[in-house]
Image 1: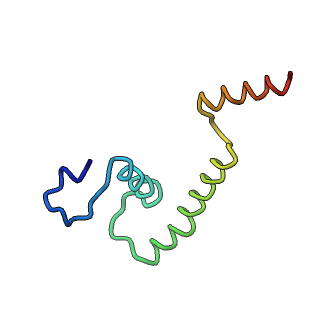
Image 2: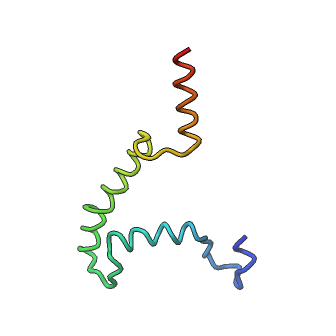
Length: 85
């Protein structure tokens, strides 16, 4: 859909609000919106702050720890009901 609004067909700027929001989160949470960081400090932040945060989030999602969606709650109730029969 975004190609219709591009003036130059050779540009490779195909983003949407989801991608923009995803890039904004690490910038605001970990980099605290400060510009002109030194490369060594940026690498330090990425390795020691960002990577463990994303790893723990991924593990939480894989293990289904935390809040459940309404569909997951309903499926869990049905599973418990089926196991009790």
